[in-house]
Each structure stands twice: as structure tokens, then as C-alpha cells.
Length: 199
Length: 310
Image 1 (spheres, rainbow over the protein chains, first blue to last red):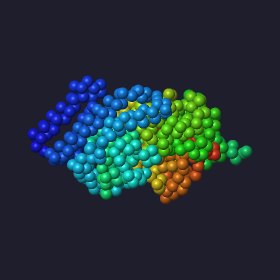
Image 2 (image 1 turned 60 degrees about the vertical axis):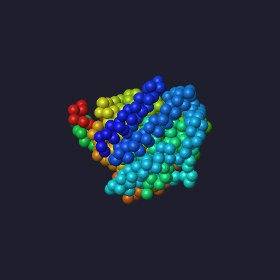
Image 3 (image 1 turned 45 degrees about the vertical axis):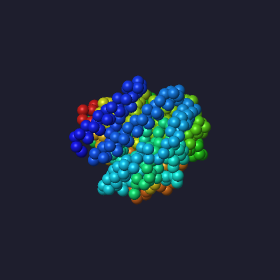
Image 4 (image 1 turned 45 degrees about the horizontal axis):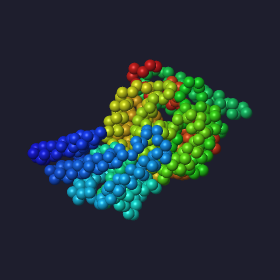
């Protein structure tokens, strides 16, 4: 990658990172950069993903902060109420959200290429087996769906997490069948997903 | 009965020999394991020594089915004779939905006698567990997906890991935590087994690549895991003793691969919890089934580093 593009991306990310501080957000939203970008186009795609994720986190935290804080010694009633309430409010704010807002066509290509690379190695079969362990998938999935209660969370091998863009603690990648989904782990909702990431 | 008495004497002799072996001097070698023949009829709770650390390991339990309730009753009865202070959970604490009534039926009701007696449960998360369980007060996770905790007595530290989502930050945290803590016993607790003879799941090889070098380097002696729905004690691997205790609820009868060369003891025909006692350099364990049979037992000497006191 050429130096000017690298500098441009870095300046853009730095500016994005400063935005919440300017808006007097109490907790700064970290901006992460992906390892998987290898070309300037990849860099742009990844920066766009990171920026959208940051916007989502701003939304998530704003709504979360409007709810009673979940104590570290919560009752099941508090857990359930907080999680469902947060989920409903986020869904309402993102009522028009569509698949592909985070996993844009460029990001889908980047993710697929990254996973192909991870799975092409000598351990590919083992990694895929680990992901597919207790991962039956669901026939239909939509953005803003609640993560299905009856479906276990897929195991994410460290070798996969190491290659995907880093996320805030409240957001996770999970495979649902062969789809890669972005999950709001606190609100139990699907933020976005991309199909057929696994062969 | 003379035969039973003879067996008891033999057991005492074996345990004594193991304890003596622990005093042989500092070694950086493997944890030493010795297991008397099993099963042993009737519940004979461990050495049950005054001042020792007593705890129970439980996994893959929260399905509100009869198996879970029967085992929970056995644990409560066991607690009457063996006053364990804590229960460490290896994950899959609640299956299916996690509404308030699920917390009750799948956890609070079956373990009520223990909770009422002041026994504290410490959670690790499995692949069936919602991440919000970390805020549930009775799992004592302090809002953390992974954490370490010092045992109330003896020089013991538990490293409670999140094996479903091992982000690089967690691995970095683990290495720092293992490096910075100096308890004699370092015990790892997490859901996916690094070693298991399960046909359905088996060993998690990719997780093993990441965790095992740290465990070896920083002197972890024992790993408690679950995921496979049976009880297995694995032969020491790189000096570390691995247990699979996914036997707290739905069982996978016949799932242990009988051809496996890593099994030291496997049991998959009844629900099991693992009772553990640590006194000094020695850990004693009894795997107890719902029927009250001790299906596996033995002692483990902790791994030692050069410079440890003999």
C-alpha cells in the first residue's frame, strides 16, 4: 500500500476516533483496524466497516445509557428486562436497517477472501470443524432478528478472530451455519450477516 | 467387613505414598497422578481434612431435566459430609431460553440447598450460555467474560476462561495473569476441552495450540473443562491433568471413544460431579455419580518450578 493512502486512512480513523470525545461521550469508542486489508481498496473497505461499527456503538451506548445500568450482581429479571428493552430500542432506531450495511459488497469479498485464506491452510479442515461444531444454522435470518434462543453460539477459533477486524466487547462475530453474523451480544440481536462465508 | 477394611487400608497406603512422593524435592516435571481402582461403592468423601480447600466441578448441567436434579440432590447430600465452599462451573450453565423462570428451573431450584448453605458458584461460559450471564449475581463473574480468582484458602488460583470467543486480548490477559500471579496451584477452567475422547466433539485442537503453551510455560497443573457430555480424566499431557466434566445434565452415553489412548478414566453412563480437595501440594479428587458411586478418584501433585520449596 502506498504511503499517502496509509496516511489518509490513518487521519480519517483518527478523526473518527476523536468524534465521540467532541460530543462529550463519557466512554470513548475505540476504532479498530483490520489486519486483512492488503490493498488500498481493502483499506477503504475496512475503514468504512470500522466507521459504521463505530456509529453503531455510539447508538448502542446512547440507548444503553438511557436504561437503568445493569449491576454486576443482577437478578434474572434485571438481565431479561435490560436485554429485551435494549434490543427493542435498537431495533426501533434501526427499523430500516438492511442486510449489507456493515458487510458491504466489498467487505463481503474481503471477509470471504480472508476466510478462504484461513481455511486453505493445513489446519483448514480442523478450523472449519470447530466452527461447525453444534452450529446447525437457521433457514431464514434477518437483520434485527433476535439471536435464536435455541441455537448455541458457534465457537470462534482464535485463528479466525485474529484475522477479522477487532470489535468492541458488546459486539461479536458468530457463524450461523455458513453465514457470518455480527451479533449485539448485549441486546441479543443480529446487526448484519453475510452468506456463504464457509465453503 | 474384612474385605472393605482391607480396601480402605490399601487406599490409605496409596494416598500416603502419593503424598510422600510430593516431598521428593523441587521438580519442574509433570503433575503426578495416582488413581485407585474404581468404581468404589458408597460415598467416602476424600480426605476431608480441616483447613483444606474443598470445591466441586460441575458442567453442562442447566437443562432442568431429571438428570440434573438427581445430581444436584446428590451434591447437596454430599455437602452434608464434605463442606465444599465453592462450585466452579465449566459452562453450558443454561440450555435454551434464559428467561427468569429458566434461571429458576435450571439453576436456582435444583441447587437451592447448596445456595442456602452459602456455597458460591463461579461461572465460565459455554456455547449455550448467553453472554449476559456474566452479570448474574449467583455466577459471581463480576460482569467479566473471563477472570481469575484466588481461592479462599490454600495457595490456589482459578483462571476462568471464555473458550467460545478467545479474542487475542483474552489470550494476552491470560498470559499476563499467569505471569503475574504466584499461587502454587494454577487451575484453568473453561468449556471446550483441549483433550477429550468424545466422539461428538472431542479435543479442540485449535484452542489447544493457543492455550497449552501458556499452561505449560506458567505451570498450570490442572484444567477442568466440559462440552462433551460425560466424565473423563485424561492421562497427563505435557505435565498437565485435564478433566472433562460435562456430565451434569444431558448425558452422551457411549460417546467416549473406547479406542482412545489418552483416557485415564472415562464414565458416561450416569451424571457425575467432581469433588476436589487441595491441601498443600496435593489435590485429591472423587468423581461422584448420581447414584452415589465414586467412579474415579486419585491424587495429583502440583507441578513445581525450580526454586519451589520442597
